Length: 494
Image (cartoon, rainbow, N blue to C red; front, top):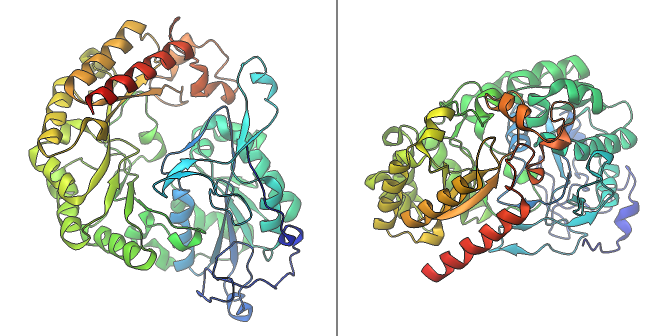
């Protein structure tokens, strides 16, 4: 449950300028020593020359949510483009785990952990699901206070993630509408890109932007504000560089060295969301790591790439070797998963020297037939070989997680159990990932046929908790028991 400290700032108005601390545009520091979104810069006469834009990361409404190295990367990247392009971006993160008026949320190694949680009524469509439904993130009255203390922006840019999280997006947009009536609201992100027509019907945004934001943002801003985004913001490497100081607390570096994926797996929306595969220059990546370490004192890197190891000799290996030499002591984590087929002895050694701590492999299934039918991503022999190279380089089983998709149409309990056993035999830690039907993917028609709910009409039924397209017997009880068995086995090995 969420506990909120009482504080007079909750009643702040737009003209409240008593608590000036850190300005994200000019870096001015005053008493208090803590940056918050509610601060007004002492040099307003300078900042007024730059049009202000509010970046809003909405709440999550769900049965469960976990802060697995989660940061609003899309907004942070666009924040860099906007600042370079002559705008003054301010971030309000409804998912912040370190809001200054809330009790600290317990995190693991000061980096990731749980979100604050407030139980809320279930939407009518989910009324029969016997689980607690919650809002994850900062309490709305604190977010309202943060918004009310800001000067009126020229525009608001709202992000979105899972399609079934749209109620949190709607709540956030409605709050912005209440506090800043008449200010243009632009909605982008995953939900907006996958089912834009649903977003246009259910979210009170002035425009829904699909695909990578920077390609459409300049035109959208000019349409709604008549103010331009400076052309300098089109520098290619900036399209992947986050503006970290927009966040209140910077515990780790969310890093993108590439965007998109050249593979087209039938269950994945990466190719739909980002049609082209873009990679950054190695020196730019190393400079970003060095800067984050020096400026913010971070020791952890969360790698957000979908395809970091593709053509590793020309990209990943040079980055890892340079990082080991120029930024030693960093700890790398891979929440999005790595391509096991690309991990040879050299890659494994480079990962170890660079400081990889948490490895996740995108295995999905031990069945080669599954991979033949879904995009030929990897063979299980390649997975076994990759794990052997990682073990030879010095990694432990509990560091080598293997994501396994469960609840896929046509997948039996026996297949899931076999996937787990084969991963354990290979020396990896099976990590079960419930399949969520994703509109627009090649697997969507099969999910539609197998679904127990009208997933084509209501995105709430895409929720992975529901196992909407799973075969009979593949349910929460079965998966819970399997997870417990996996934990016991891995602990016995460790």
